[in-house]
Image 1 (cartoon, protein in one colour):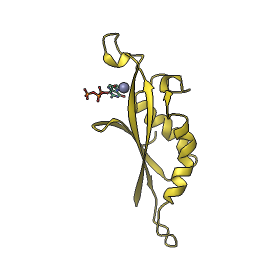
Image 2 (cartoon, rainbow, N blue to C red; image 1 turned 30 degrees about the horizontal axis):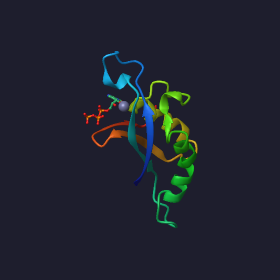
Image 3 (tube, rainbow, N blue to C red; image 1 turned 45 degrees about the horizontal axis):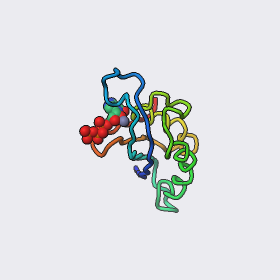
Amino acid sequence: MKITQAFTFEAAHWLPNVPDTHRCRRMHGHSYRVELTLSAPVDPQTGWVVDFFDVETAFAPILARLDHYCLNEVEGLENPTAEHIAAWIWHRAKGALPALSSVRVYETPMSWAEYEGD
Ligand SMILES: Nc1nc2c(c(=O)[nH]1)N=C([C@H](O)[C@H](O)COP(=O)(O)OP(=O)(O)OP(=O)(O)O)CN2
Ligand SMILES: [Zn+2]
């Protein structure tokens, strides 16, 4: 069974590896949406995969490192593409959420990156 919990955060960024003429080279902001998907059998006692409250608690300190920051200044996110943010979150959340199976990061409602681990 899979469950997914969504979170949002606001952040600024710019992309250092695109040409000077690319508009994403300039500092700008996004209302990011993160979807954490966890995959595991349903516990017959609780009736759930993982308590959504526990997902929220585990993710809160990671979210706090992103919300209202310039992502380029966050260690490990010097080139903060949606792809890199998804992998960055995965590597920091997997320890506390062993059932994590994918991380989606939406830059806009129409564009996202998904990371499922190495
Ligand atoms: N594969 C990727 N491509 C792009 C990424 C990325 O992370 N991975 N990032 C960007 C920029 O961050 C850009 O700001 C994304 O916004 P954009 O696609 O331009 O969407 P907008 O809503 O800002 O613009 P519209 O005019 O509404 O399309 C670019 N590419
Ligand atoms: Zn952007």
